[in-house]
Length: 264
Length: 288
Image (cartoon, rainbow over all chains, first blue to last red; front, side, top):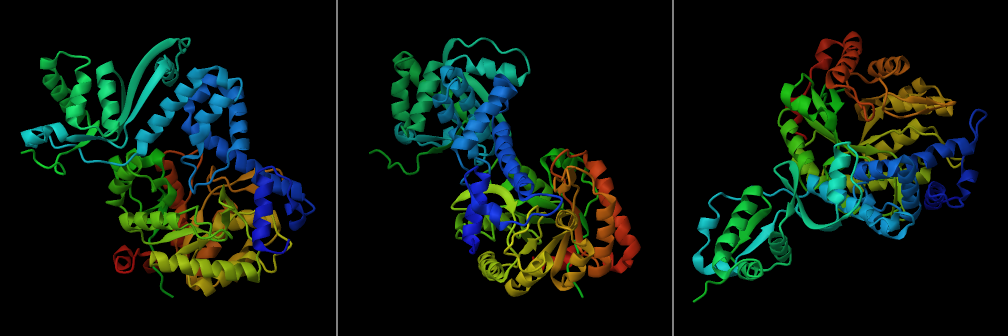
């Protein structure tokens, strides 16, 4: 093993638990064997990755308990290497593993708790946007309203959930006994207002319109979604109320009408 | 010789954000972990900006992987440069190590063989990084637990020669010298005496833990007496060097850590004349 690259590949192979010739490249001493010395690095490698998973999923950890979370973490570390310069993002395949690995895959509520925690992690350090100007709605030229497009704050995640996973997550966060999993379909909104992460359940009409905003639909199309929930004469008022509340809550970061040509 | 002297600092840790912002404690400077602030937004950058407004800072990274045989990570360098433009640190440092190969990251500071081939490889990469960042960087010695058969010289000669060829600066971690000296059976004073003084720009101090016959660099204990003794020797050899304590686990309240830093100030006060310990923040602004 003459070259630096070959040596580094062998060292990494040892950390990954693969057969590796690194042992032959390292000096032994009377007080510590090569195996003992290398084990400091191999143990540290797995500990660091496990700590990253524990940091990202404290409620999933609490729900599963130490033994099952250790089993899940070991399987994760065996399956996924870290390719980023930061451990932030290492856990991004957790939902995939939970959906495939028995016995975790038999409990779909686990995948939903994972998505909740991931959404909060995202909200924590997503990009900043200045709070919308309070008089923004009044500045929109009337003719441009139908084509005006709201843009959500970068911290926003919309989570359609089938089970009472949020109630379970809340109980775990409060260190109380979580309820039994049960069907409770709802869409949840997680975002950051200022520096504080927030969440709430969405009424069906609000969830539908926020999904439409995610898809880039203009205000006119958003109103058509509301027609399925409200009488036609109530739609403009409901749409305005929603828009105002999203601006106040900083769920919507900007309204874009400048690019829209005025109608003639 | 004359070198910029920031005084006595601490690593900026999330546990202390609120205390620092509410009390504005008497401390000369903070060192940030660069990677903690390579995020799009939110709390980390908000706290960073607030505290930076009141204190000088330096940036310390763990992911440059300067010794790797993978190509330099240009995306990482771009983010490092962007952060440096935001923070305007007095300097930027990272470790004399490798962290990844074949695009797999170990998230550990892994040791290098101390030989000519590694010197040439690393000195060239440091030059490329310095050209890209538009500034000299500091390279720090590691704690290590293995020695390669391929090593041809002691670590201090390796570090000194890389710094000379790359024209970079040095961050000497006094605790790491102590830990590696114990683990590899050399005299830590030989390490200090073997370093050329002119490139040493910063000292790290930290605690460690015993694990069987080995010592592990854990940063979860106070600085121990033998490391304080080594620090005193380093001050005698190198003069006034900006000094900080790293604490990454079992982090105490801020006042307790500040009191530990006062030990460093007292040791320096006994060894160095008062004029040597005048900080040079104002003078530094011109070169940072």
